[in-house]
Length: 157
Image (cartoon, rainbow, N blue to C red; front, side):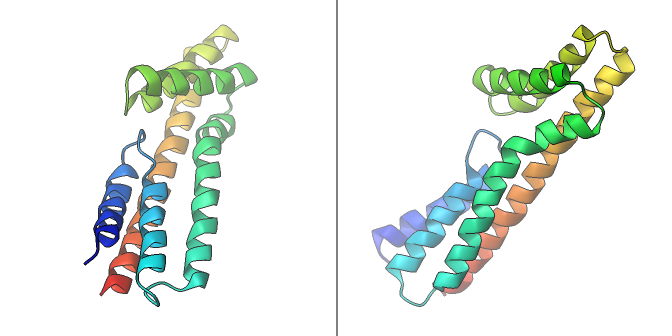
């Protein structure tokens, strides 16, 4: 087994782990491992599979940024609540990684709603919507990374 294949295996494993930890780009790691397998071991992964997983990964990256905002919006958050969730998420991931993104987005949405004069229950509902959006992304990322890992290890054998 070549050094590149060992690196690919490590990337795929990190991809599965990283998909559950918000600070790590798990899907990107997993996909990078699959790309290495494609070039290192002819016929292990088809070009079609590589393209499909690449498109899915790109969509997942976009959804990763949109889901917390959409979660807040669907739970009735105002513009201030949405902005608060974005700012809070960014501050949370910088100062309290890896779980700070959740707490920061939640607190940011709540503070944003309270500054709009909303009742505490409506503010908390907006914060919970942000959390639901964030957790949904983690579930999707984990499903993606596990799918890539299965595809990878089936191709490796």
